[in-house]
Every structure is written in C-alpha cells, then in structure tokens.
Image (cartoon, rainbow, N blue to C red; front, side):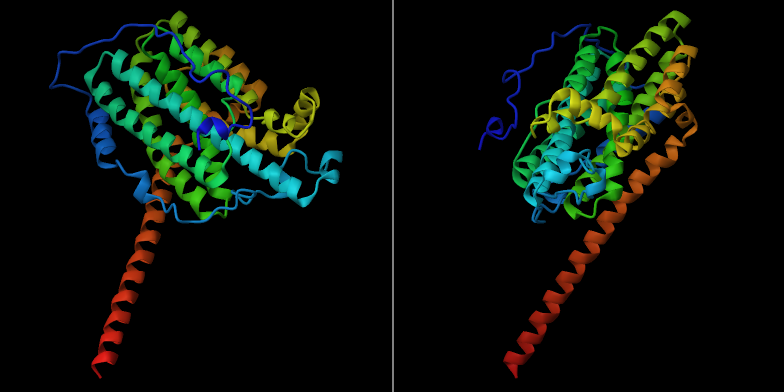
Length: 370
C-alpha cells in the first residue's frame, strides 16, 4: 500500500523543495583532525547496525494502544468530549496520537538525514565531514525504522507539522555552514531525544521501547558531535554573530514548543481548531511534557556558548531556564547503557532458546535410540 494511502490528511504535494543555499567546501588536509572528533567518527563506524535484524519486528502491536498510553495523559480526558466517547473512540484517539507522534519523528529523521548530508557538503573540516557521513547513514536507518513501524504496526500517518516544517526550512535555507548544526543537532535532535526518552521510559510495549532505545543510542553521538563542533567554532565569533545565533535559537525553541500540541489530531475528531488549541494549553501533562522536552536543549545551548541575556529571558519565559544546569553527559551515557542492556537481555533470551532446542533434540534422539 502506498504511503499516501495511509495519510490521515494529504500532504501539500508529493515533494517539498527547499532551495539550497551556501557553498560546498573541499578540504585538502587528509591527515589531520581533532582527536575527540575522530574518536567519535570511529565510534560512529563501530556502532552501525541493521534495523531489519536488531529490532524484533515479530512483536505484535495493538494499533489502538501501541504505546500503552494512560487515559489521564490524553488531552480530551476529563472534558465533555471524553464523556461522550465510546471505548472504540478512545482507542481511535490513542491510535491517532501515536501516529501523529511517530509521524513527526519520521519527518524529523528525514530532515536530520538531509541536514547531515548538508554538513558533509558545507563544513570546512574533514574530520567533521567524516563524522557527519556516518550520521547521514544513522538518520537514514532511523527514517526507515519509523516508517516501517507506522506502515506495519499502526497503519496510519500524519503530514509534517507546520512548525517543524518551518524550523527545517529556516535551517536549510541559511547559507552559513554552522546553521544545520544549530537547527538540527541542537534544537530538533535535542528535543527529539527528550521526546523519545519520555516514551521509552514510560511505555510498557516492547517494540516501541526497542526502537526508541536503539535510535537514542545513535542520537547521543549526534548531539555530542554538534556540541564539539559548535563549541570550538563559536569561541571565534563576534558578539554580534553570537546574538544572531541566539535569535535563531529563541525563534526555533518557540516553534518547537508550539509544535507539541497535536492540535491536528483533535481537529480530526471534529473539534474546532481554536477549542483544540485551548484544550491542549489547559493540559497539565502537556505543560510537564514541554518542560521535560527542553532538558536536552537548554544545557546544550549553554554548553556551546550561546547564553546571552535575551536568550536567558526567553528560557525564563518558557519556564525552562533551570534546565541549563542539567548534566547532559550523564543523560547521554544513560541512553547508551539502556540500549546495551536491551541487547544483553535479548541475546540472553535467544541463547536460552538455543540451549533448550539443543537439549530437546538430544533428549529426542536418546529416546528414539532407546
């Protein structure tokens, strides 16, 4: 079945074209590079994996409750609309919300793939080109996996959200080589990591937990790459140039915050847009979710040297300023450990199955011989 047959609302055209800006840069220095970045490149090569085999696609998923979402976190819970809904309607609502979330993950991963390829093209340093080439492959794998989950397990997709599309458009149109880093590695990837982590840590469903844990293992490296490259570069910029980047971050953070409401879902259930926006803004879960989502962005922005007065005021307005002191390195190491623990559990279970099969075959052979 074509992807276009699964969209709840038709996308605006089969292809979205963003005019390219900036120069492709070649480097003729092939034997030098930053030790930390080359080490990350080596790790990127070592950690490549196949989504068709590492993930257990045989696990069944209930499309009407793919994430095990409690009633209380759904925006309509406790409203007059909820009181009128049947159990089937509530299942449909869960399906739509899960489809909407994972569709944005999918579109964001395609954007990340394109931004990583743009970095390969435009960044002046060869060590950064090497690493971003491995990231391009990572992002292709993530898009493949999210697409497969939506096609095979949920059977429904949503078009890209306007705010995510706007931030991608701003990122890709900018001719400065550092902007794909800032827009993608810091803002979009940072926010996605927090969203992935919240679902990974709360779902009781094994397939989405696997997918998110393994994707996050890759994304931890990507954010580290952006931090290294931008921290080095931003030390060289003037105050005026830093303020320009801070303005981009402020606008991007407001866009990403407003992206998270899922108003499109409620509209598909017959709720007028204005009321859907009001209901979303009244959701206590959404306010908590928003704050947690900036747990990866704020400390990263501070770490790379963007921490001017106007940016700090914006984070105070969003209620996320205190997240600037979060331990980003600890969060990233935990992402690695969770994925590795899932691998150990799965390999142990597979080994136990193989041992049981061998023992059963031996017993059967002995019985037949007797």
